[in-house]
Length: 373
Ligand SMILES: Nc1ncnc2c1ncn2[C@@H]1O[C@H](COP(=O)(O)OP(=O)(O)O)[C@@H](O)[C@H]1O
Ligand SMILES: [Mg+2]
Image (cartoon, rainbow, N blue to C red; front, side, top):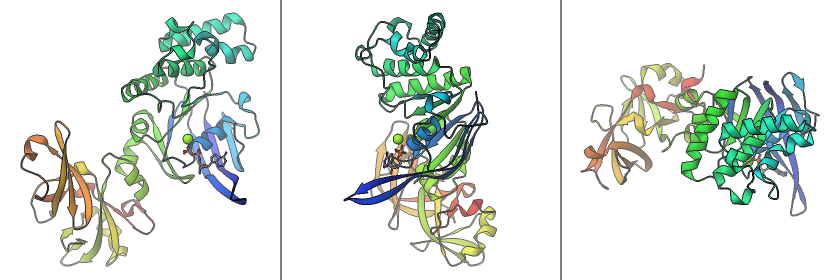
């Protein structure tokens, strides 16, 4: 077990485009402290630098700048095999000509472990993962879920100080993914080994991570617990990336009549919640982006409600997802199916925003104005 520290890690790849040299900054001054025993998730869209970060920790990629520490050792120049890590990939990377037992024991055999110790470790891992019956099978005779278990087993037998996972569940079907997600969580609760897990799937990130790091263009956007990331998004990128359906956004002006008001594009004014009044002083007569999650809007008429017109609705079972427009801006809200029977395209509905759940963002910097100190 060990903590992992990334100290201002940068990785620039040089490639060629039409014979012109192009520099791509895959990872940009990443500073990250991963605690001993923590399950940390790196979350972000494709191309944001997740795999590169993991490969730098693994020693498969040398950073252009910065240092990597594992368990207080500067391992920046160490080869992968001397870092005490084990990596699990999306495509499993099993050896096709070896059976399950051989696949699981191969790494230890290479490290010249005694046969008895190898047998003990492989059997223990197989018991944890419930794959003891599969020892004699080759990978092509296994289902996707079984292959992923073998890949996990191969990592477990190494008894690494740190596990590195690169989208290990993406090749599984939806049902199996949920099951393996729960198993990974259980495995971590039992082994308590520091784990760094890369995914573009926010549900996986929210359910597995003790903390989540949101990356965009190689830069950290926010680090926090799943609750912090969801309830206090640091900027528009995070607010938009986390949550399905996503947060609703409206462009508003800020003006003062008798009191401070948000002014929607259609002219409707609603009160600014007390908690935000001070923070909005600098935005008087400027535009802000108001954000509110679908579950924080109710269909009630009041002096602070905003009129919307329904564009379509989707039946989901207990709930209906209602798509609406306020002026030209689109949004969504959930409604109990039984209450929504008379609401169809073209209906006018009043939207009342929970004042404690309104977020305001600076449209120029993207920053969450409510969190600026
Ligand atoms: N070996 C490489 N050579 C050149 N560019 C690369 C290389 N590996 C990654 N990149 C670029 O770096 C960026 C980050 O890639 P990656 O870390 O794979 O992102 P992610 O895993 O988040 O999808 C992308 O723009 C990608 O094209
Ligand atoms: Mg990747």
